[in-house]
Length: 271
Image 1: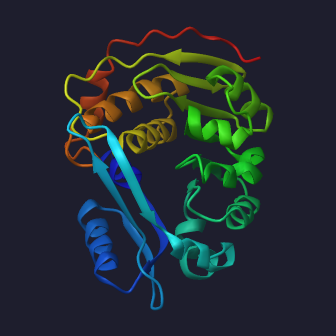
Image 2: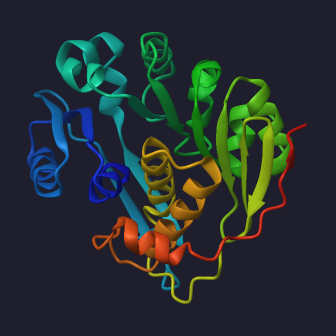
C-alpha cells in the first residue's frame, strides 16, 4: 500500500521481499508492474506468500485482521543483501516494518550507512521488534496502542510516548489515535494535528500507509515535516473514502489543494 501511494506520487520505489512460488506471488508481481514499482520479490519454493485478510464492518471500521506472514521468519539481513542488493544499495531511504524478525531489523539498521530509515510498527504484538532500531530511526509511524508496547509504557498518553521514543533516538515520528489528533515530533518540537472529519469511511485499510508514504515522499521532495504531514493526512482521508487500500487518483496537485487550509497545531518543545 505504501509503495503504491509513493509510486503514484512519482517516487522511485522498490519492494524487496520473499514471496511464495504461488498464485499470490504472481498477483504481487503483476500489481508491481501495473503500478510502476520496481520488483525485487524473490520466490521461495517451500513457503507461502504472506497474506493479510481483513473483515470490515459496514461503517468501514475493522472488525478482525488475520495475518499469515510466517515466511518473513525465514529470512535475515544477509538474505536481503544476497537477493535484493540493487534495491537496497540504490535507495536513499529504507522503509522497514515490524513483520520482519527483530534480529533481521537490527542487522539491516546496522548496515544502512548514510541512508535514512523509516519504520512502521504494524501491530501492538509486533511493535517491540523495532526496539533495537530506534536509535537509528529517522521517521517512525505508529499509533497509541503500538507505541505503548514498543516503549514498554502501558497506559502512557501520546505525549509521554513521543518523549520516550525521541529519547530512544527516533528523530521524527507520528502517533495516531483513530479519528483523534495526530501527535508528531521533529527536531525537538512536538505538536498535534486534528484531521477534519471524513463524511463516509468505506475502509480503514491503507489509511496509515498512505499517511506514511505521502509524508516520506514529500520530505524526500524537500518539504518540511509539518507540511509533509498535512499532505499525508489528505492522502489518508482519500484512502479512507476509497474501497482500495490506496487512492488510485493520487497526485501532488490534488493533495496540495486538499491541504490548502492548514490544520491547527499546538506546537511546543518536546519534554
